[in-house]
Amino acid sequence: MNKKEPLIYLQDKRVSKIKLTAADLKYPVPPRIKDVLKQEQKIVQVMPTIQQAPELYYACSKCGVIPPQWFLKKWYKRSCPCKAEERAQQERQEKLHAWLEWQRINCYGGWLGREHRDMNIVSQMISKTFNSFSTDSGDDENFRKALAYAQAEKPQGNFVLTGGYGTGKTHLGDAILNYRREHFHNTTLFASAPEFCGSYQDAKRSLDQTQFISIRQRVVQADILYLDDIDKEWRGEYKQPELHSIYYYIFDERYKARRPTIVSTNDLQNLEKYIGGAAKSRLMSLCTTVHMLGEDFRAMEVW
Ligand SMILES: [Zn+2]
Image 1: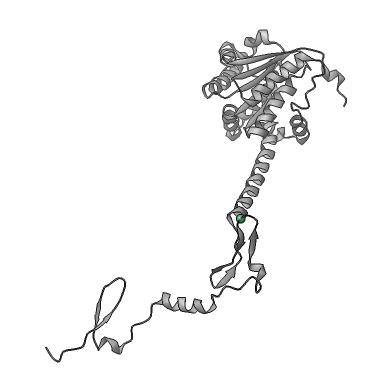
Image 2: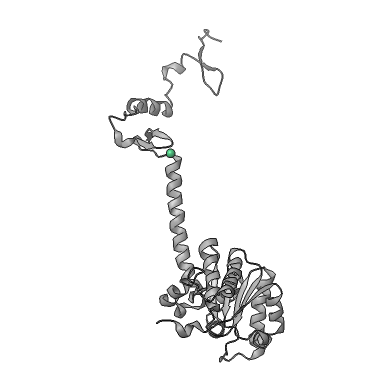
């Protein structure tokens, strides 16, 4: 070995000691890029005071004054968690508002196809609430309203409204649907039985089966379904056994999933004739039946 070389030690976090020879020192150790950036930042990174840049300071009643933050060579105004929560809350409200608007249209016709959408019908149907239900005729009316309200607050199986024409069946049924949607954000579907059967038949016949699949899925998956006038005469092509099998599919699937259904009928005694024995058994197995009496108030309605 030739002449002994002096050893120089350099401290480094990763390696405890690095031996450097005099030859190494001819080429100075390059400073790490991070260190250079840090030094540069130190020069400009002096936070302006609130007097110098009041627009960069945010004041919250709960969190106090929030100073600005340095980011990508610039000072930015910061907000606090309260502000972020407020913004998220507003966003959630807007989303819910849009969802409800769409659900109302979907509920009253939209789900059966584009041609069933009618904003006049929608606004008329959503106006049917417990508040707008008249109980002028007395205690019986109040009792029926209370039963419907209990169903709206906490559905206990199915709900059958029976009675003559114009006794307020549809109003109470709609009030339950509207309450479930607006207060509990349930998905709700309404259809008169003939309207439903017609759409079902048309969708089934169509070359494009998308609508048919959609109706079949929605009718069993909706949180709450209301089939109005289930005994109304059907003039379509379906023969009774076909109709009965459609109703059985609906009531059986919904029964298995414990999803409540509301049905209204003028002829409860002969329900089996309209929907079939098996479907009736599913519908009535866990069910509240409300008998509507009284005058036909439609005759008194002012147009
Ligand atoms: Zn705050």
